[in-house]
Image 1 (cartoon, rainbow over the protein chains, first blue to last red):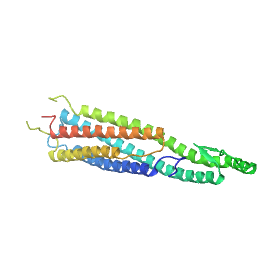
Image 2 (tube, each protein chain N blue to C red):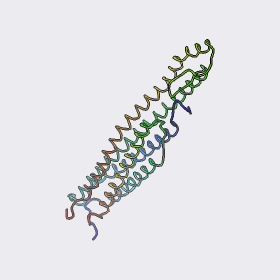
Image 3 (cartoon, rainbow over the protein chains, first blue to last red):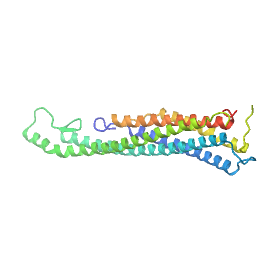
Image 4 (cartoon, each protein chain N blue to C red):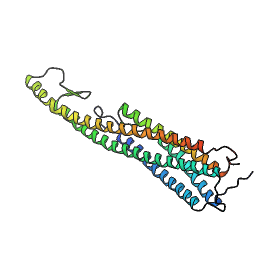
Length: 187
Length: 80
């Protein structure tokens, strides 16, 4: 891992992304079981052809929860995929950062944050000129690494923000299903 | 008082089983999400990821409850 230039642990990001996608897959399987069970009930309503209002309300609540479950699973898969993409980008960023840091060292210059600077101290005019001449090229390598990771972070934040709004909506849907599942007695 | 269902009892049992398993899976998924930590290496990015995980876990807990309520309905707890 690069100590100074690129921070973060791509392995942990990949692990969380993988966990999200595994859970998404499990939830989708359970959602499909619910779809099948509801489908069977719709096809074979039972000996009495008229379904009560209470039963209809219960089935409507199940259907609402099912929609929220599927949507949550879909969003979870998207979030996991986004984190896995970020993990790949971060790993590439680490590699670019390592190369840039090796170049910094070879050029005899220093990194101050993400800025390449000439070191303080006595140096011959020839040595100072040699270092100064290398700064733009070394800086461009540093910029390449930081820009690569910066773009990846921007993409991830946008995706996380969008999907967070989705999860909030699914949470509200699930709550509305709870309220719908409690019809007044005597229906 | 026992609940009289007009829907096929065997199919209702199957639906109740599916609801029970789905509710449990949603709860386990929320726990699983909160059990891991990802280090994105950047404070704003970390906040976005952590916020997403909190909201995802909250949605899963809400689903756990709504599915459990439906299970109670199907089992007749609210119809009795």
